[in-house]
Length: 147
Image 1 (cartoon, one colour):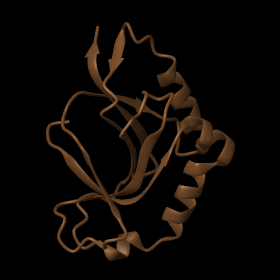
Image 2 (cartoon, rainbow, N blue to C red):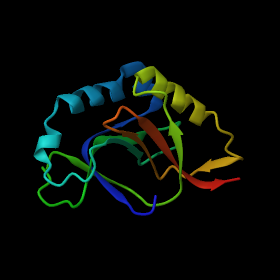
Image 3 (cartoon, rainbow, N blue to C red):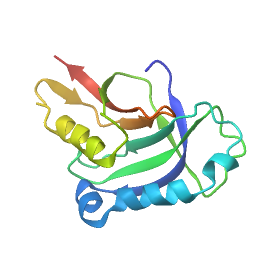
């Protein structure tokens, strides 16, 4: 990705364990989909919805922040109750989910978690999912090095 993207939306701090056992990410998605965030933002730069994973404590094994929202051009007139996260420019390996179905997304993440870190060194700066209006979904994983 050549230039950073600024995402505005709703955030929580969670872990894979909490996501699986307490449905923390599912509950965040429910709250996001029931919100009026899209109507509150005046400067959306893409029709896609982004789920950004950032602030990793210990790679994918520890806590991290997830923000679900929209890409914006600038931060003027952002409601104070919303969170802001920047997806930095850099190297991202793109994985395509079969669909936007939850099980297909989980299966794609499981493939990513099984990558050999000696062959694919993730940077854990920020990873993101992009949900397009035509029903496609990609997971973009930041990496420091791929051999």
